[in-house]
Image (tube, rainbow, N blue to C red; front, side, top):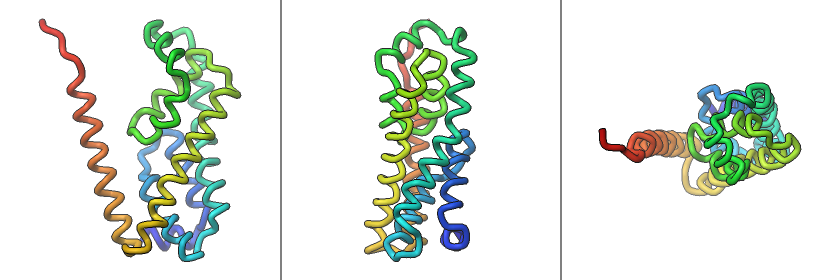
Length: 177
């Protein structure tokens, strides 16, 4: 089904999926990118179009969150804002691969006064890294696995990452009562 959707709508589907991901709508974008990478290996999807469409969709979806954060800027807890200024939007680069991080980092960048051009540069680099990583994985795996097997593997990995992320967030530091 995913293959048919990608073949029928091409990179428009990646633009839309990237946008949905950018607005924090639950979307298995990594799975879709892995499938697209496998199709690109077969020449059924254009690599340049894939590398433009998905990051563009992500950027279009995340910019409103940045500006909403800018509008709510005075509401950022000072301790959190100070820590974010230390780490900066670089967190987007690797945080994109951890569920929930972009949803908090993007508005936080606006809330803490990060200049938009700096945020945009890091956001673009992050969206490109994410797109390239998953699509290249799908491309490489398509040498040995069918598209259905790649999608099943990606879904299993996505569930595993979600479970690990939820366990890590629950096992934070505890204080004695």
